[in-house]
Structure formats: C-alpha cells, structure tokens
Image (cartoon, rainbow, N blue to C red; front, top):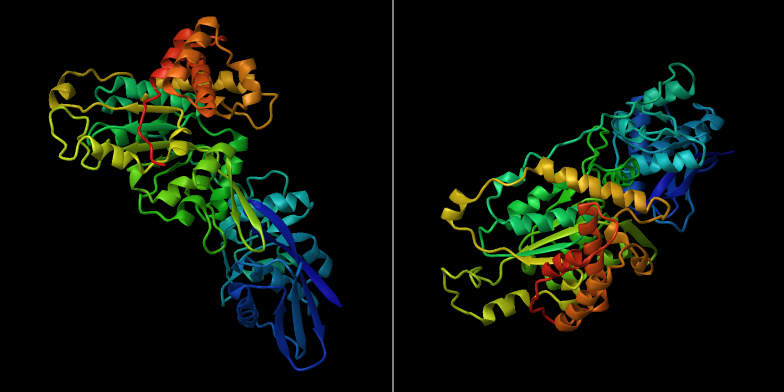
Amino acid sequence: MVTRAFSVAFEGIETREVEIQCALSNGLPGFTLVGLPTKAVSEARDRVRAALTALSIALPSKRITVNLSPADLPKEGSHFDLPIALALLAAIGVLPADAVESVTALGELSLDGRLIGVPGALPAALHAAGEARDLVCPQGCGAEAAWLDQVRVLAPATLLDAIQHFTGQRVLSPADPGEIRDTPCTLDLQDIRGQERAKRAAEIAAAGRHHIFLVGPPGSGKSMLARRIPGLLPPLTPAEALETSMIHSLAGLIEEGGISRTRPFQEPHHTASMPAIVGGGKGARPGQISLAHNGLLFMDEFPEFARPVLETLRQPIETGDVVIARANAHIRYPCRFMLVAAANPCRCGHLTDPTRACGRAPGCGADYLGRISGPLLDRFDLRLELPPVTISDLDRAPAGESTRTVAARVAAARARQMARYADIPGILCNADIPVSLLDAVARPDAEGRALLVKAADRLGLSARGYHRILRVARTIADLEGTAEVRQPHIAEALSYRLVLTPGG
C-alpha cells in the first residue's frame, strides 16, 4: 500500500505541487528518500525518525521508501519534513490515509516533535485553495497563511497536535489572520529647508511612480528627500498587499503573520552583489528589487554600485519582473518598483559648488557619472540637480508643506489614475502606460506637442525619453486635476530632464 501527502515546491512566487509517496516493503530495515532532494530535504529522514521516537512511535522493521514526485523537480527546503512525517504515519496506520491526502502540508520538524516555521506559507495557502484542500503548517506560520479567506488553515504547534487532530482526539480550530501592521512614516518634508523644486519632483514621482535621479553635492538633501518619499505614497491596495506579502513570505520577512499595507522601502548598500540586488544565490531567493515590489528602491551613491549590477536593472525597470535563469528552471519574480537614485556630481562632490574648488574639474564629473550608461540614464523619468544649501539658507528658508499635505495630493492623483485604468489589466498608475495607450490618455494640446517636438530635437531625446516625458506630463495634469495634458505640463516635465554625460 502506498500512502500520499501533498506539499509544494517554490519557483519564485509560483508553486508546484509535490506528492509525497510512502511505501513499506519487506527487506532490510531502512529509510530511503528519493525524488531529487537537496541536502536539507535528505536530512528530513533523520529529523522525522527522531521526532517519532520522541513521541514513542516506533517504526516497523521494514524498508521505508519515500518518493517526492515529480522526481525530476529539485526539492529544496526543510518544509518537506511535516508532509513526509504525515505520509509515513499514514503508512504505518497511525493516521487515516484519506485525512492526510485531504490537506497540503509544510513545516520543519525539530527532534522533539515541535514544528518550526518555514518561509512560503502564504504562497502555499494560495496553492491549497486552488486544490480545494486545507493547509497544515506550523503555528508560527498560521497567522500569515490565514490571510486567505479561501482556505482553512490548521496550525499545530507540535507533531503530536497534528496527530491528535487527524485522529479526532483534539480537533484544531482554524488559525486567525495576524494583525495588519501599518508603520507610519515619521519623517516629514518640513525637515528639509529649501529645495522646493526637488520636493515638487518627488511629489510628481510619487504620484505616478516615476523613477527619479537626484544629483547634488554632499549635504544638499538628496538622502533626506529620498527617505521621505515613502510617506507620500498611498497604502497598498489589498491585491498589492497580497502580492507583496507573498514575496516577503518567501524571503522569511513576515513576522508573526502581520500583513502590512505600508509600501516597502529597500535601501541596499552600494557594495551589494548582483544576487542581492536582482535575486539568485542559493534557492534563487528574491533580491532587493523584488522585495521593493509595489514600493520604493533607494540606491544612494548610485555610481558606486558595480557596473554589472547597475546594468541588470535595465530590463526589470522596463518589464516589471525579473527572471533568474537556472539550468533546470527559470524563476520569475515581480519587481514593479519606483527607483530613486542619488549621486554626487563628481567623486569629491563639489563640482557644482561655487564656494569650493574641485581639483579635477571639469573631467571629474564626466568620469564619475560616466559610470552610469546612457540606456540606464534614459530610463529615469525625472533627473534634476540639487543646489548646495548654506547655513543662511537653513535659517531663512520657510518650512514648506508637510508630508501629510503633499500625500493628500498624491493620493488624489493616484485615485484619478486608478479610475482611468480600472478596466485595463496590469496598469495601476501612469508609469505603467504602454506606448499604444499614450496617445489616448496623454495626448498634449497643439502648443504642448509643438514644444515637445522642438525640445526632443534640441535635447536629442530617444523614443523612450519622449514617451517618458508624456507620462510625467500626464501625472502633472493629474496632480492639477485636469483631464487634458497642456503646454505647461509638458514644459514642467521637460524641466526635470537634466542632461548628464553618461558612460558607454
């Protein structure tokens, strides 16, 4: 007799069903695990044996064979411990086989039978809902998985609790979803004195989810401004929160099952490797660009990042997802993020500061910003220079508008965009407008089109740059609350197109 249990293998945020088959046969006693398991999965037989021994459950003197099907799919992770244990318990008659086959299970076993939380409970719950099964997972993952209403989540603390549930001795109650954790941004735009033009650009970028590049000397407020942009962004919609949480679940970043409506903010150091930024490494885990999905990715000291790392951003910025290629699989993660990059104008940082002298001017700036390729620069919707701020400027400059005031305008502009694109799948804001729809939603008036054509010829705009100007102008019009894109909107969008000297 062959007993079965079900679990999942992860390929990005997608899941593939894994059937755990257990058979007992005559022969030399042994425990064999087959089906292309990795080292962590192969060690499950020792953890399962020790956990059953701790519960005083003796294994029969037979040959135990456990197969993880499909056999050609690599199995990674310790979450196969629990379904292997359930299939084995059904094979030796401790659990009813039909009850075990009615659930999808995942969880790691400790040697004393406790169940340890594992990443990926939320995608596993979505898979179980699609298969019309209950989900059995460790207690530490129950609150996270219970956010899906379509599936019943059982979260035992120990293997003994699971056994008692399946045998009817003590039926488990369905797990409750964790509390939504909304962490308000405590940083305020009023902390930045001066730099009103940069604040306006940040407002436009937040309203349309446009990529923005800030260039300025040290202390001009680039990092301060970037860290205050999350406070301008509206909360995640329920669909966005679920999709973002699935990525964070795979990365093991969801604590106590709390699903947050706050948009993610990722700030990698410039020494980060390519797998850390775009994903990969052991298990092809999501990188910073995927962890920033539906949120903001801030890359300070932008030219200091390794050139290959910067160049890998080009395709994800355009497509909104990243594919990690492996010999046996291609793993896709969504990465629709807002990129905020900051850089000094040169290595010493004082090329544009009239009060200080740059010892290597004028070639210092060209060499430094030349580390950024032209195609990558072309993907920034807004590029602007921040002037230096003096102490007297700090004393005289007014506080300006608060984050709350600006965020209200951003939210109103986002609401107009969501209403406009409600019937178009895949478009949430102006940054997502495909070229085929630009003429319908962002066609400027005659004066605006004439200005844009003239500026495109003078600035040498590429087709991509031309389209990005139209998207930014559409966002400016939305902030103003007007349906038509007019000449002033085009003019303001063009003013944020700082001409830089890129590398090859």
